[in-house]
Each structure stands twice: as C-alpha cells, then as structure tokens.
Image (tube, rainbow, N blue to C red; front, side, top):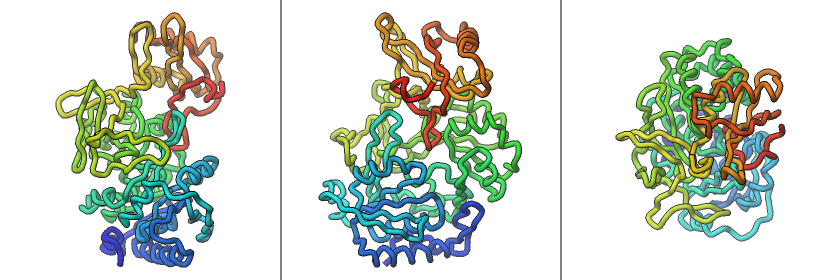
Length: 451
C-alpha cells in the first residue's frame, strides 16, 4: 500500500518532474522508477527499519530510490559523491547496514554492523521511516541528526504553487531535502546539474527555464565576481532565496542590482528542526520574519530559540541539544524589530578585543566590498595583551603582494569602523574558504587554510 506522499504524486503523472543534466523525467517516470527500486530493495532482503546509505546526486534514479526507501520505511542516510572522503566516517557513525549507489545500476553493498542505536530502534518500533543528516562540520565534529520522516513530511500535505527550482543544496542537507519535498509535493520541476559552478548553474537556468534559485551567499558572491549570469538568459527567474550562512549587506545590494525585479528571500533552517517559513521585510533587507505552522520562536538574551513539531529525535553521536520543554538554543544572536529579526552571528564567533565585542560578519561585509578581494573570513585569535585580536583571511582575485594587500585593507577600513574592528593580522589564502556546500568555513585555527 502506497503512502499518502507517494500516492499524491499520481496527480502529476504527465508533468515534468526532474531535469538532470538536460535529461527530462516525468512524474510517471519517477513513480515507475520508485516501483522498480521497491522491488530491488525487497529482493535484497532490506527490511523495514534497515539503515541504508543512499549515494547519488539529484538524478531521477536517486530521487526514485529516496522515495522507495521512504515507502519501505527504511532509515535513510543520504551521501553525496562530493563528500566521498568522509563516507567511511559517516557509515560508521550511522551504523549503516546497506549501501545503495544509485549511480551504479542499483549496486547494493551489505555491511556488518553493531547493535542498533536506541534512537534508531525507537523509529523501528514506531514503524516510521527515518532520515540521518550530518552537519557540515565547519567547526569540527559532524553531528548525526536523526529525524522521523512522518512529522517532517506533514508540512508538505498542502500543495503550494508549483515552481521550476534548481537543486543547489543536495539530499544530504536539510535545505536540499526541503527543496525535494516542497517541489515534488506541489508538482513542480527539480532542475539539477552535476556542474555546480556559476557557469553550470546559469546554463541550467537558461535551458530549463528555472524560476527559483535557492543558493548560499558565498555562491552568490562567486556569481557576482565571475559575472557568468551575463552570458545566459535568466529571464525565467522569479525568486532567489539565500540561507545557510550570514548574508553580507554588500553582497545583497549587488545581487539586487544585478537581478532587478527578482524577489530576494532570506531563508532560515537548522538540521535539528527543519526549514521554517520566512518573509523578508523587503527586497534587499536582512530583516526577516520566521516561524510558520509547527514552529514557535522566542528571544532570550538576544539569542534565538526554536521549538518545532518537525524537530529531530536526537543525535547519534552527541547529547540532545533540546531543553526539557523541547526548545533549542540556536546560538544565533539577533536584533529584534517588531515581528522581524536580523541575524548578527553565532555566539561562539563573537570576538572580544579588550572588552569590545564584534561579529565577524560585519568585517567580512566590508572586506568583500573592496577591490581585488574575492572572499574573506574573519575570526578571533588569542592575545595576551588584548584578550583577542581580529584576524582576516582573504582570497584575492588577482595576484598582489601581501604588503600591499594589508596596507590597502587597513587604509580602506580606517574611519569606516572602530579601530578595534580593523584586522590586526591579515592572511592571504591560496585555497577557497568554503566547503562543498558553498558555505564559508568558520575557522578555529590558521592551519585549516593554506597560506
């Protein structure tokens, strides 16, 4: 018997469902592929409640396998090809029993495993399909968050306007999972490309007439620098949504200028609770209202707390972050203006220079607006005299001597910000400072970026 979610897709059988590297699959194709996958899963003796790693991108075969694993009530651990060096770690933490590589003609690998984690056993006892997502690990340990897909899917029961959406974040990220469920539950089109570069993305936008572009601020900054959007027809675009990290105002201003008439929407979500509904106060504004059905929020000591019906059950490798009433301290520091908030940064990232506090995002915003600065990160470094000093690590567009870069940055910032906010140390990086999800890495030590 089909679940309500899979059954609802029959209403869209004749519509396009997935465009993968230019290849179009309809909802009928997706349902047929899902049926085949269900048979393969059963033939492989993968029982309800089994923990299964699914390796693949947003190809129709991967999407169909994902749906089939939901239908067979498995615990799904999505793994993307780009993170293959960490797959052994993820497989071990999630105690994966089977590996399905959707790219290799249904190759299924069986693993020897330890006894089930109590959280996974809870899902099995409840008869619910599950989802294991790993945090990006931009500050170190990747935590394995376990969701029950039953409450997570409930928010998609009511279809919304169908859109043709690019799949920028992948199925191993809560934002990618949200895009997947949101688009197909509404009969929209998932447009995916294996070439996740500015040129590849805008080529897909032009060829598949993409309407919604959900990306990270770092990727938008890269697009502005390369100006690849000028080489393609972007007239189909109606909305650009951005999230996963702070958006510098200078980048947002440049995006608004480069894409006039397009709605700019800030999004907010966490691996632990899912994606919340959001509404920007206006295009070009970093003030946003968040919440929606199934979510409660409160501000305590300038920190955002969230309570969600779709919250994860817990971590496989870390204590629960929820309090006794189910509230999660996001550790995001915010300003409040009526119904709207503005994100300032994480409490763990506050830099304290001789008693004066600042957020890295403020300095990053200024740095990336300067000539020849491709990207920048800012952190605090311990100092015996001042407590901490401000350290900036920058990527250059063109070669420039370190001496000239430092002199130019300090000269440009002098008079624009207080003296204590001007970087005391400036490092020129040879490699990009963002991860495979195009999210700026939050550095805790200099050794993480070659200089």
